[in-house]
Image (cartoon, rainbow, N blue to C red; front, top):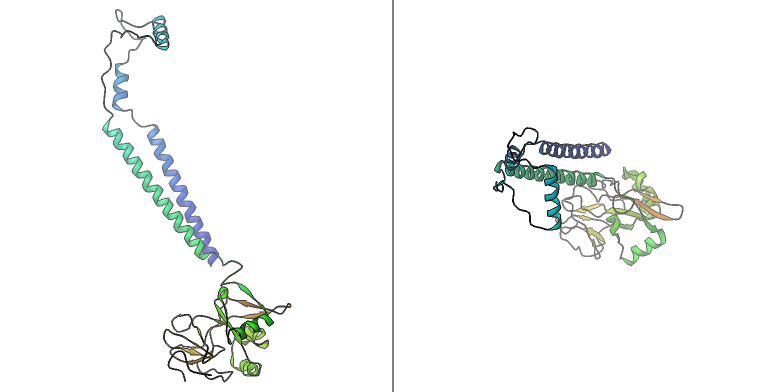
Length: 288
């Protein structure tokens, strides 16, 4: 579906560009075959036709014309001919008006084309598939011994900013209960079986970022008081479920790979596979 939308936007942008270029070309053609200005037309009407001149009229012959040209090139002053200088005729207002209209029309068309092109590119950028790194992709968090050391150094919590996730320890004694309780167990089994769980940082209630609480060893949302145990199962507050999580894999090199492009809805209210209660004072009120 995304590919179809992207192709459609590209086609619309190309059609708009072609239409704009065609309109500009037609305007140039019209101006090329337009009417003469008033000054040029008046000069043409006053020009002398050498072939149809009447006897007795003063008509310059070729030798005289060549002589006048030679004198002009030499820098000498040339005596004025029998005719008086042509009076200045101001530009035709109608012609100037046409030029102004053309300028405005082309400016409007150019602005519209740039706007449409920018909108199309923005839509394509929004719908374009995510890159190979960062949130929305498969992230290699690291080797399991290093992850376990990071969890211990973080007081039971390890935050991975590029994946917008928390990685915490999952106790081995809770695996059997997780198999019978988690409907999504197959998607997270490789991680749980090596003792870790990857949780999405966002609270399922209204989307706030959920921080850890070092004293209670829970996740506690400061926005509306939702609380979750260390593996993201709901313990209190208005959240409709436990913290969402990501599918996990363990590579042959003992590395944890988390797919942040597939968010799994958290376990329902009442799920408690680890039996963990608050291990100290809560950071947010309302805990059980």
